[in-house]
Image 1 (cartoon, rainbow, N blue to C red):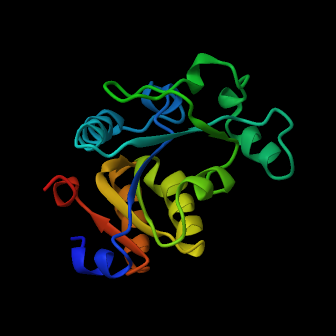
Image 2 (cartoon, helix red, strand yellow):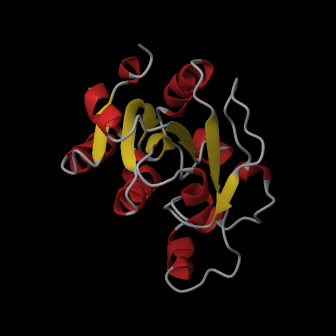
Length: 187
């Protein structure tokens, strides 16, 4: 549960809803399918409707496949697709997904998010996959001094076990990272 006194003692930190990689590639059947994608999408829509303005991110492959990315795509050959392919489109009903932040990396933490979320403010992470891009983004944001809240029912992993394991790892980094259910934010 989020302790509002802790957030207030940091100057009443503003909250930023960040939606990670809610794209067709992870919703449709295939190698990167996330089984609970639609459940997470419904919860993200409820959070956005509550007044939290979403910042949308999108994984877009770099055709140059620099360094270890070439080996990664050797493993996932079916995902060696053009960055303009519709598989990379955002699929998030009832949420304004215009102007996403596009990055060819697991972590979506970087200059674009840092410019929107000042040090000491809270980043509320949602999206897919808990055990990959959520985990990587949370670690980067916490390292950069942002309070991170991961909304467990607004995220989904490659499996329930992978999702739970990633959340367990993130909980070890409290108070920099908190793991909550959406009800804690919708009060």
